[in-house]
Length: 236
Image (tube, rainbow, N blue to C red; front, side, top):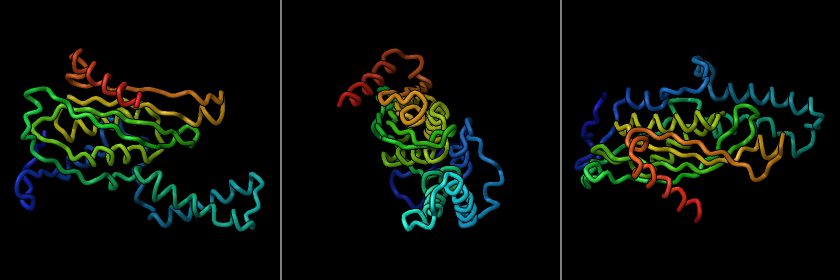
């Protein structure tokens, strides 16, 4: 396993990743179905192609694109897809990650770091939104990840067509690789608009998925502490 080293430009305690480990953390062991030729088109080319296709969809639906309110909708949708809500399809957009040394001896006391992150993604089956909350915990292994980095990682994997189970696995796997520890837990609670806005149209439906690794899987006290933390946050 690649170890982190002190970064020469960061006197004191800051640590940075090697490019190889960062790339592996962006791919994970649970990759999304992304074509290998994703970079053959520029972002501008992708926007242009998507806009043309979306225009045809709108016309087929019977919409009048000469209406000023609709005229630029194909371009708006295409730009949104490429630059925003599906930007996580490009592994080069994985956030830059840095750490600090854990001088607080978390590992010796098995104290966990617990983070709550709201997220939005798109169901890959119907291309409609799903949104929810990610509850993430880990036991530090000689280093601590910056608190802003965890939301960025969640956002990266969320910004692509997803299924919740894969999203859960990708977040957990990426953090385990970055933190160099199996002691990671991730729980996602999400509402899916493919259930809310179509089909059964259940406004109260939500889905829970969990990935428990390392001590979170085998130690009852740690697992209970994690879920008690979720219950406290969920009730607030």
